[in-house]
Length: 278
Image 1: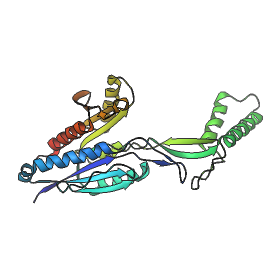
Image 2 (image 1 turned 180 degrees about the vertical axis):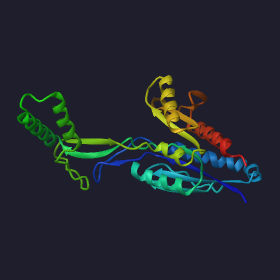
Image 3 (image 1 turned 30 degrees about the vertical axis):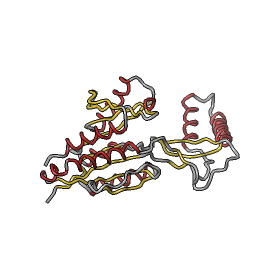
């Protein structure tokens, strides 16, 4: 009986609701990870006999955002798609997959939102509330309130204003708005927490930075989350058919790529070399 190797791929960009019709999103299309799936399927087709002799079979768990590009199913590489929308739904789906299957490798290419909506209010309402709270603090103080006291008033008001708009409805567009965002949990840490021996490929995208800064940022993310390899991209070098990328092991550059296809084939080769032994 063949040993089934489970591979998890995340792809696309998540979106976070502002209200019932407006969203915060990012530019990720998911096309690179679709290419990774295609490259894996092509390698498994070309080397089918070798993997059969090793007693190995492979299955993909493909977590994909609603609007992302999806690869066509290839019979050489069975795939199950799991559709997600925002960071919260992505976390729920990932936790379930990681709990239910012995994941051998992860390609975490999804651009998960760094922020989600905390609240929406009007600019005038927030200014009025800030002024009222400051005036109340001044009136209650025996002398001039300290900077610490005023800061506490400002922080409290910004963190939890009383006149928030109802985001379960379409927010009216007849006033200038203040949109407060809060950070979302970093999901890349889930993979090694559940499966310490899984082969993990992480991604890091910056924009128009020196190569040394890109390498350092990607390597730090990889170090902090137990990544075996990191793919580092600069958004300024992704245009007109070019998709430059650096494949890193720690801070060492293992390969340089110029197209999505080169990246996909490189990642597929690294992944199968890491887990494709009987």
